Length: 291
Image (tube, rainbow, N blue to C red; front, side, top):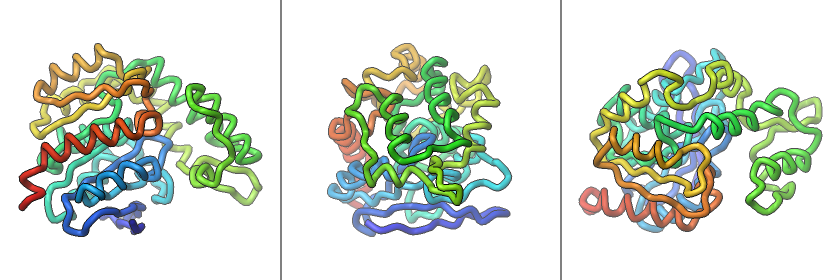
């Protein structure tokens, strides 16, 4: 595995941090994380995919991790979608696209609206056009709570995460947690993402159920490529009714329900999630991988 920076076109020449794994000529797979996360969320999954011959490109979405922040505050779903389209267009062949939450929404808009034909397949991790308002509010509330004031210590941040994820063992102030924080000149620790991003989401009332609009549903209904929806069995964002709604929009979709997983499917049940991903991609892209 190695890291690189992808410089996108546009007035700012936006810099996107990425981690690359797998054989150079392997079938490409882009992985886009959820809001408030980084490409590190895919670490175990990319190892599994690489071992099966896939070439993985896990990115930090704009305003997250080591990627550049948008100086103009351009954090609409369409902005994230445009980044994914440009990254895909630079590859030798159409990549498979895996998107969790924010990354999945961007994938729907990218393929279903902005640039159909950009991807070879689309896997959505616990995200659909319809999401439960209470679940969305919980996520947005967590991200917004310490966006500007930060934390006095890494230990304090660990306690906040443990309160947010009570179903997991308490998270200590591990070296890994430091990757999600930035220490500024005032000595305090801040999340690795641009607070302008979550403030924009808050002003818009959250990213859920099209916010009364049909943009996401219309984009989903236009998806003609192979689609795989993976839901956390205990998700408080994607209900079974939302899955039915999505199936009406995308009747050809494949579906996996990961038992004991919440919205944070990858972190909750990594092995089961990885198995589901590998099986879908191998069956979907078998012929392309042989060519």
